[in-house]
Length: 305
Image 1 (cartoon, rainbow, N blue to C red):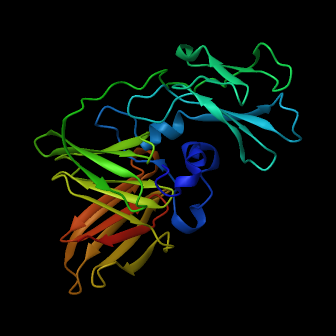
Image 2: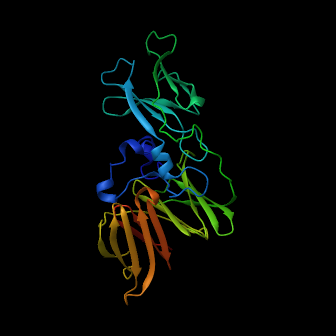
Image 3: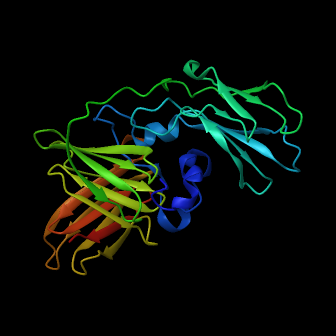
């Protein structure tokens, strides 16, 4: 989701392991939508990343350097696929596919998952030549403390519409959850959900960052999606995408930034603030201009249609 690179969705779904891939250019990297405080009742970006653990284990396949990557995370409701194992060659390329919660046996890859309901699945392997029975070879790494075996079900709300996202293949389904409350749930092109964001009267603008693809939502149900460009970080001033709004970013502490938007005459148009894990992103909309602040002090912006 994948929302940025459709041919590499497996990599993005393990963003907790490889989240530094584009951080230097695009700021904090995410593997899914982020809803910050998780008011909507389902998994947020922070939930998903915190509750995803990965490990490389040996493969019984007689191919030099081959290994199995096992990925543990809660079972799906509105989040990713849950426990997963993929067979890879020494360069990290997929071999014969893998197994997951919704497809626990892959005869061609010689992989099988069991014990899925325990929160710590078991990996079974079988040799491709002469193998008759699967053998239990590894237990999945334990889920981090406080992570559920299953994501809780969310109130589905009333479906409003689907919006194409910036990559051209992923979509966001928009739901009305109540007065001034909307949810946007993102989906890869294969129908797998990659999380959701919720806008409410208390937080009327929210955004998620999927490895550089930004998706923003308002409490009116408006959606915008764009690719973040390389941008300044830390304390700084810059002109935003509309060419006339200026943002002044000040540092208040470690990963704690405030961004003040003003017009050409210096009049304040709005303020955003982030503070580490408490609030990993903040969004605002002024007219047709959307802006998002992240915990490195970087601001990305976009002019909607």
